[in-house]
Length: 166
Image 1 (cartoon, rainbow, N blue to C red):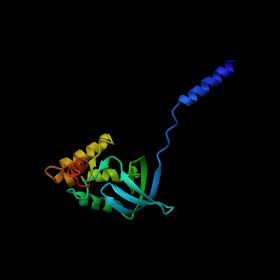
Image 2 (tube, rainbow, N blue to C red):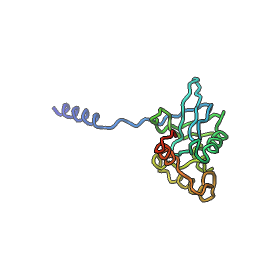
Image 3 (cartoon, one colour):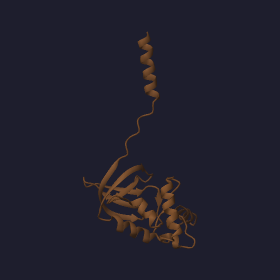
């Protein structure tokens, strides 16, 4: 009888224990397209492509001030280069959201350091990234040169309110 009780207890605990968290996926490939300052296309070794959205940052939209400058900076950093991506999530558009690395540098951090993306604190609370943004802002780098920079999420909301596609 004791063994039956022990077996039932083990079965109960096995059902109550949350599944082990999967290891973060890592992808590597060549960057073949830059959509904007926080999104690119990665060509994988099997010749498939994946859209990648940089985690924790939000770039100005194309028609927003510094949108094309942000896109150009990302292009300079990674276009036609081998990049690895640590997957964090998949967004509602099916894009992989992750931290990208080129030549050992975090692309996400480099974009923050250059002042050409906002730290997207809605999705990331990394204090080091908040500090990188603050340093770029104080130095008036990139979009921080603007007297009244508008966060991309606010700009998109304003565009939707005016009936325009962002």
